[in-house]
Length: 306
Length: 322
View 1 (cartoon, helix red, strand yellow):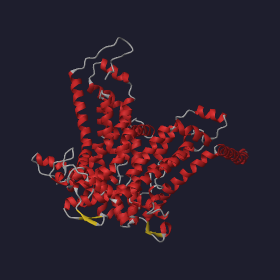
View 2 (tube, chains in turn cyan, green; view 1 turned 30 degrees about the horizontal axis):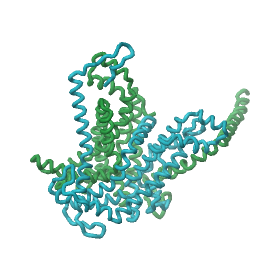
View 3 (cartoon, rainbow over the protein chains, first blue to last red; view 1 turned 90 degrees about the vertical axis):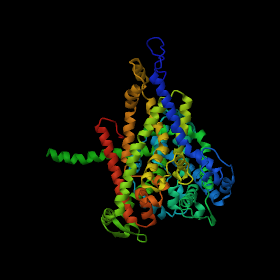
View 4 (cartoon, each protein chain N blue to C red; view 1 turned 30 degrees about the vertical axis):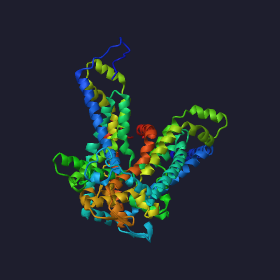
């Protein structure tokens, strides 16, 4: 709003903020604060629920802050072997999966970023077409089945190995590296591979971080692939486990029937539901503040070029 | 005579240039052999996981038998497509998919634009950054989590929303059990999850608007509203159009996780969409041929829509996707 403060021609002028301007600003800030609060409120309520006693929840006393603070629900979640196992399955898939994703995305993106590479537009079209048309769920499933990946952890890593969207983003990052660097390197006798490893990668730290995060969040949150390809309970991911618990809990609150929960008969308490949700969310919340700016940068580049 | 000589000369000329092209390519191959090698895994990956399943579309025309495989199964022609059209569920799932997508578009498309405009007008950088960070948050959580939270707060007995309604003297609403309210919740939850993140693109587009335009407007006496309507909005129009094309192009597809996380048996009349139906009838029920046929039609309509929307945009003088 300091638009008119400095103009190339003429002295500095102070613009008197009109009444409408000020009321607009108040209106704007208020509305934005409201929206942000509405956006956040469901989480805060859920977190509060996870630390409140079931009695307080049922009495409707919990709004933003825990009432009758208890740690039992959270303790029950952390001590549940199946939940912990599914947590580690998800960690494995996220870490290993992202590593694989990055290696293959980088080696695909780098050649495509080289303008001097003949035939790269054919490959680009080949890749982009897959973004517009696909065989669908059933052929995809049958393929994974035919490859013998069903009920293995690799079914969660290999089918989604390379995302054409991310390749395009990465390629754009690589293209921003000046050609002069490469020409200088060639003079020094540096080959393509060495150039990639010793020059391009170190310079691409930000983009590598960004794309890694895209993949990592995708793995962490993925549910459909796990449900599609895996029915061995030992290989359930965190999201699948969460879904099972919440589904039982749903039926519980709407039908008020005691459900079987992992072998034992329990009434799924409100606080337990909430605690499970919080448990699955905490890892993302913890890394979020630090990594958020990378996501934004990546999204920007992806949208402009993609 | 002339024609014969020319005809005799031509084949040799063509093959000579072809030879040159082949030699040129071989030279390129040698020069950047390692780069082409790097492209091999990607090529194989896309071939195996994207192009081979396209061959799997043949299943739409066959009576798929697991033991015979795709190629040896019996050919049934358009039988599955006929079945598809005579299936009462089919119209329901298509209607639901279109309805949810359309509502999502009507409500969800303007939301990030409006939010971005509002954020753009905010003077305090700190406020802007903090509120943006908070608004992006739902985008990073899985639908399982979001769905769990939604069921939590909308629960008839224990949920905070109904608690509020009760305290206001209104009765409680079974949001997730009523077809009408379920659709409302679906649409609004879609906005909740994506509006914040969507502002990124529009804010970036707004930052590309020439600040001199704003200065000139102020000199001409334009207030905030005027500036928004006459500068900001036209300035982001090309971005808006591109995103609109992308969204329209996906009118018949719908993700799996959003409807799946929110649905329950009571509302399946409105909640069952193409993707969830394919999953339950196709994968779990084994109706491969039928659901592959549905999927194929869906992919084709998608392709036509996205090409059509792009064409329409270019006709209107805007830059399309290509």
